[in-house]
Length: 534
Image (tube, rainbow, N blue to C red):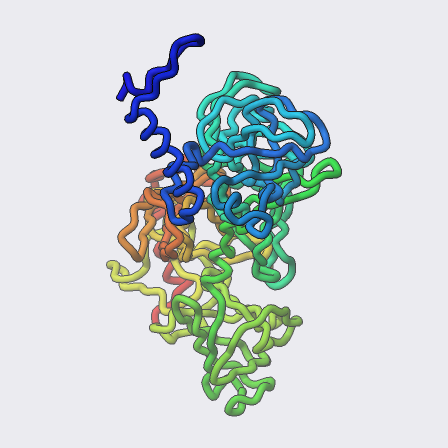
């Protein structure tokens, strides 16, 4: 076959063997067959599917490696069906954002305006690009420009590029466009705004947005608030993670691709959730009159809280509005009365916002005890031994202030003081428990500011963090927050019981202090006087 198709030189005699002539005929038949056969193998025509003829319709001459937006075919199916089927040819125009994001070609040769040249719409090619940031891994068109601009999102993957910013040589992979609206995880750093206040103020946190892998800042100088709505008038915990997506925004007077924060993984302050009253039932002594609000002779009410129950006993003259279901809504109550639509309960202090203060705060106890009316305001010296089951036979006889109660100044209390209940310890320690429900993602939780106020600075520690599901989580105190770190990040909600301990303010460094027998006996007399034995 090689000799039969051998070329001849000028002046040589023309001798056409039969095999050579038949090869010419076979080639002609094959050409005719391919022209008629619309079901032929496309590989005969499309030798390189990613490189096609592009007509320069930008209105100006283009250099090699210029980028143009694909406006449509030069010859459409209505113009010439056979030619349209044989080869893809496109019109290239000045790129428009967002129309041509991911829909562009890179010219592989210089081309005059209105002329046709080859361009790459898919494949790996060398190219000159405008490097905006050296950490960018993608490139795409820029509005009304004919050179690709780097970014975090785009239709070309940067396989290699020269160091530095500006116009640089690169090797890119064209044709991997992805939709703008796809969300992705981001890191968040709170910059401005306030946490909000339960029942009073909305949260106004704004964040800077960072790439979760490179820690590069994605937004411009202006921090963003999430577009997903937050709960109204709710104090929120600062988020460290969230989701975002790319969108089109106007930058310097022309459309450009920018990041948009979709959701910040904020959570309501857990202490506010923990002690929300969901139900109340009062006995006959409350003066409720079988469910009718009014002033009575005092009495006891069983409060149903979010995670437990408690009994609160009110002094005479307190107005109580009980009901079969007592749903608490945001509100406030005036001094001397309580409102069934505006009450909240705090189990650490045993007070209800629906009670009056002129005749004394209501006493409280666990629902299992049912006892009330113990003296308030009395307290034993710090470090006192328990009065129960000792040689003296004394016991507390009440459920209010006793040997394990500390009464301390409190700025938030209407009386100026509050009670905290502590365990016996070599040190003077206060304990607190946070019960939260959060997604299994790294986050930070605000510690009750009242607990922070009565503890020595820097003394708070996490003593336990118990999840209700088999997840691996660590917890530590950082300033006024508990920092949670999960081994595996997940959107699944997990319930955590977090125990905190802190040294009472003013008692740092005190551990197993020495006492004399005289002090011991005086302490016993004090306990017996504070808690008389009936």
